[in-house]
Amino acid sequence: QVQLVESGGGLVQPGGSLRLSCVVSGSIFSISTMGWYRQAPGKQRDLVATVTTGGTTDYTDSVKGRFTISRDNAKNTLYLQMNSLKPEDTAVYYCNSRHGIWGTYWGQGTQVTVSS
Image (cartoon, rainbow, N blue to C red; front, side, top):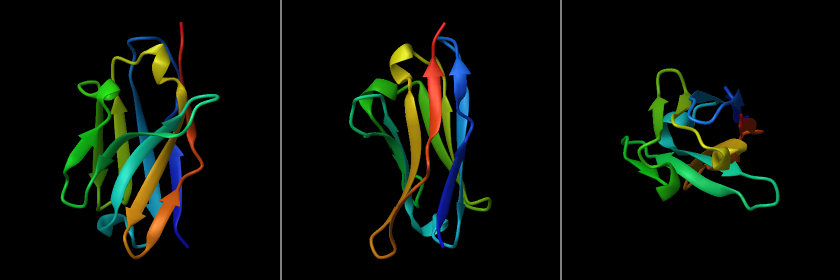
């Protein structure tokens, strides 16, 4: 049974920082491309950042230079360091794992609210 559990969300002022974590149970973490997505109220779920098994990262334009995705295969944990947060970053953030054979899995989401 594969489970993804996010943590680290919360309320932060504009310009502040948060670090999200996603712990993955099961044996798929090290062989899967991992990603963070977000969904704001009334909007579709959008890709924020991905990291491949080889460590190659990619970001949506709106977070480049502010967010950093990373993975620790020894801890089966994915991270998203978010700096210089803006109100438009407010959303539920979801962890995602993707493997061509073993499938795609989602976490339950963690709320990030950027507000003064």
